[in-house]
Image 1 (cartoon, rainbow, N blue to C red):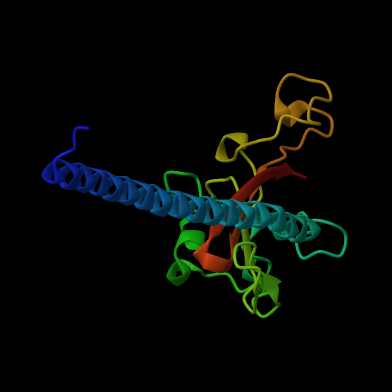
Image 2: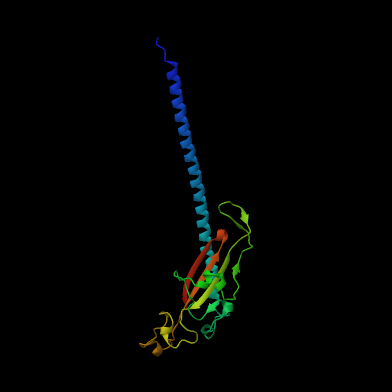
Length: 209
């Protein structure tokens, strides 16, 4: 009966051990990558959830701004709309905006000149969708309304403003000759929502009275 040399057995055992160690390292790296990927996915899902919630909360700002135009609101009178009204966050002229169309005063708090109160839930407890912990930091909603006109005062020339085409055609060919065809300027409502994790959402809506 032939015998396997002892040196050969030791050498083969060493190769198997080395192979096992390399495989163990590969499995460890894969496990770490999998855990990190799972964590990143959870964080991304949480951020998307916050962003979606902020977009829904922006509706409260839109509604508050629209209420200013309704009966009893600060902007219900047509003559009031001809002048700025800081207490209603209203500008009778188009506000300077950034390249994305957001008024710069909403992008920079130091440029904010309005005096209307924010809609704030900053102290209301909310649940973090990632950690499922209750935290005492909610959201703050700020809106501004600007009339898309180049100057304040009553509109005497429709070229001064962005004019709505709805509800104006009552006969005639020129807006000054139309029965009841007073120019209806367009108003821009811009809402900024600040939320947890320093998230921000901006929503805009155009209306015409």
